[in-house]
Image 1 (spheres, rainbow, N blue to C red):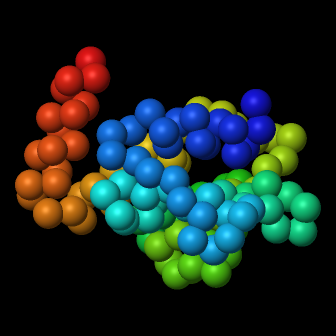
Image 2 (cartoon, rainbow, N blue to C red):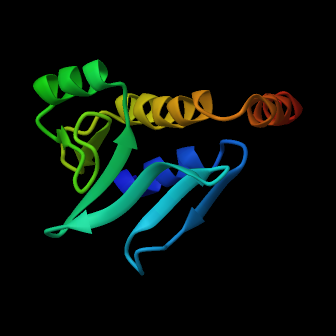
Image 3 (cartoon, rainbow, N blue to C red):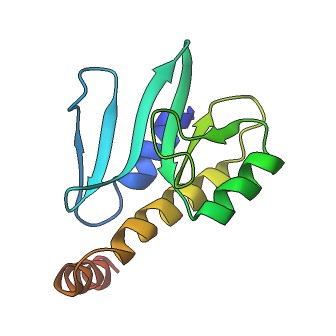
Length: 124
């Protein structure tokens, strides 16, 4: 499974997720209740995803993984870019996508959070 396939399949399982292409074809923007948590695109022929992270977590990830960099065209403290490569760790990608989604949810209004929690319980 490619980076984009893996990330998209994970992201689309979460409640209230939509995908748009506001920047044109070739850049998928994943949102939860209109708040961006992931972008997918190609950069210099390589598949890339941008994900929201806690600043300290992002710095640690960049230090450990050669394929994780500061967020391309995003706030460098709050976003990372993950580039597809042969060493890609699928469980890590799963965690990063989920963490990005959860970070965005944590900033939503209380009623929106309750709605998402209700949808999660209905899915189980």
